[in-house]
Length: 344
Image (cartoon, rainbow, N blue to C red):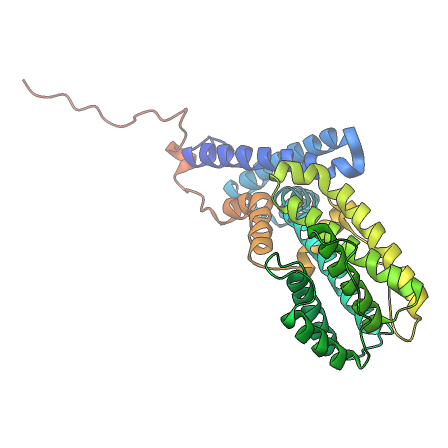
């Protein structure tokens, strides 16, 4: 009775069915982007083959035979499941994080482009620190001119204009308000700011328009990306790819335009591309995991290994009860031996 079913066999059978069932579902999901509707049949066939091989390995162990060949065949088929499982699990749990990271990188690209363009524009005032001081004084001047208690060019406003003229190395043309009300002084402040900014920058029309458009786009995409990062994960997954494509298109257009205006010597620019369209594909999952390997990637890797190969290792390492051939069956466990009759 070498093929009697023992409690160990039942335990291993249940464990194998549970693990292979999970592997079947994940394999189906992982292969769907390659095989479409056929992925279900392929995953089912692989699951049945794995269960059959596990049973054969267990029987070989109980019979005292070598299970090396069967184990090699199992490893071959389980490798397909492992690849599909890793793709499915990694994509499921990392998809949103990948989108978040991609959009944060795009946000940085916009900011870096603005910084690089600003550093290479042909400013009249070349020193960046001096330009910052001038911009700060412009804001203070606007506040002083529109101050309800002392509208127009008061004493402090004149002091600010004096500092600005010293920084610019030029005289600022005096301006007058169009009216003596709040709107008139607000217009006066804006005209002073525009005059001083033009004196500081002295940019060509193309450079000036580029700076304006770039500033608007940076603010626009910073706001949109920050709003996206606050969305629930489900909404992120549904809208991320469209936002990535649109923002990268805007970034590349501005970058190429800046490169054309400033020239190759001043600005090096390479159009940015996104790989997020590849999310869900097997190659992308492994490439991203390798490039960003960390604790989460390690956990997913170990989980997939245990899911597909763990049960085989358990069966191979599980000792076979030598007494099970005689009385180990849960179905044929009959009491044997002498019957003791008590003496009355």
